[in-house]
Image 1: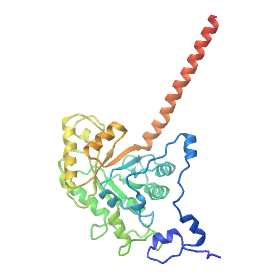
Image 2 (image 1 turned 45 degrees about the horizontal axis):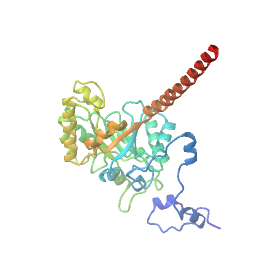
Image 3 (image 1 turned 60 degrees about the vertical axis):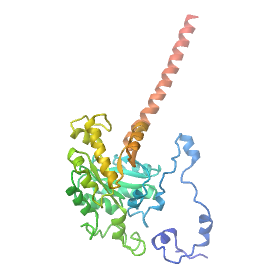
Image 4 (image 1 turned 90 degrees about the vertical axis):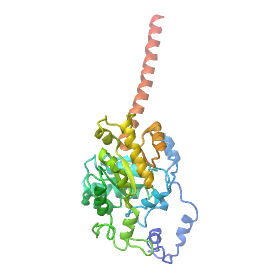
Length: 346
């Protein structure tokens, strides 16, 4: 009879150097590729398309434990285009659904939606676990304060976006809050992991190294001052990417809020940011909703594209069928009315 506490796959992930023998009852399960996570039959029943595979297999970039940040810095360095979605509805069930859809990353917007530290923590955990390591969680924190940064990173966020970064000094302070010594001043988190269970690290590394090396730091530029200091911000080695806040940038330039626009001053600002990002090999993160905008962003060289969001998808997913079926109903009613007129006329 097999021992009750035979080593599991989790043991192998946490302790890869250990000589573990796979129990016989697991051999049939591990001898071939795992079954698909979703049912094509059920998807067809509800008319839901299956998501295509992404350019990056994040299973290759997950940490030893899903409690920890994925190797998002390494994923960025591949230079591949990644597609993400925004999460702004403060709901664990919504996060659970989004995590299963196959996006490369989930952008949790804690700047524009009031969220408690507890909820941010739980959403990050939900996304990490329900994606089964396939979707990294990126958090836009509400301020540059160290507490929000620490709470998100302790929970296992794979990246932090700092809004309204106007100069290199602001960026340096944010970096300091993200990294443990000697690279920064982040405080040791005694309760972020379960000692001996979710704090595994590669050989020769510690849990602190994992946090320092895995989680990406992304500065958001969305003002005239930020544009003027884009090169100084991009030049910082610890900055892993740049997000462009197009709506706030346009308003700061005296233009109407929006994601795109033909104005020369707006185009000049975008080109200045892109030139600085290209010079220091920093990917650009931003929204790319719809085919036209997506192509425009790709032509500029953006690599981290948010192609959807929970709120937008909810509105479009509800109003689209409503409009379509109302049209069908009106057509049926019109046909009935015309048939009645002909009958009465006869």
